[in-house]
Amino acid sequence: MKPKSSNVTPIFLLVLVIALFFLREMTEKIVNTGYTI
Image (tube, rainbow, N blue to C red; front, side):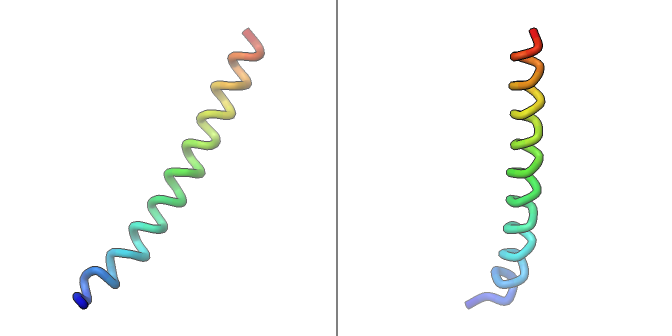
């Protein structure tokens, strides 16, 4: 068990959640613009 892994895991999860949220908004914008066109 390495202390670094325990410190990196929460940061990785936070970044992953932010990335998923950003990707979701980007896909919604693309879908909205696609329907608009």
